[in-house]
Length: 311
Image (tube, rainbow, N blue to C red; front, side):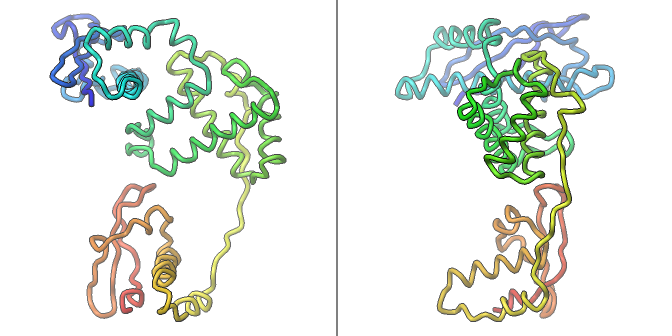
């Protein structure tokens, strides 16, 4: 695969310096200049990104643009391999492909669906959640794909063109009605789709691909409602635990996993990935699970439930 490095063209400059990319693949080294520039005193040469400093408040957007450039380069390289039976592009061919990818005409032509798809690929490649500082989870990426599918289906069914310039209050009203009446989504599910769309639109504005700010209207809102919590009683859990499934080993394991989720409150993505390394048996009465929770991103020491380990 191709390796992408960002360097300053003039590291000793007193003012802004342009950036140069060094691409390495299959014993080839290719230098490629991009239009981004930065004052060297705000550049972290080890991280190859802008320093996170108040003196350069634009660093989040600047670093996101570099992240996207890296994703785009790898996508161009991968597409060439796929289209040419895995043959490696020459440095000259790769430069021409990159010139086309990053030309103003190509950047202006990108539509909402194409940008949404790039946003998903960017998230899959390691985009970091600014609130948690952690990579975007697989479950979140799955919701991105679902939201994009709903948008495409809405365009197909209603024959309404969906693009950056058509996202307005009328679109919001029609789309939420479609999700509620045609797709039968709950209020909270609709809110999730609108939230994701607004995240993508915000990203497109920050990348200067879209200048339509209608989605920032107070009327373009995410409406949520309290949901009913459905749960099993202690007696029902006990009955489930005592159910004899010895002749059905697969169901026996599924039942145990379900009980782990019930007793610990872990989400499926966490308890379904538990292994022996997460289990700590303290004594005959106490056993603990220690995990790195996917949302809280911290180690949790959970309450003992020894009975599940006595089988």
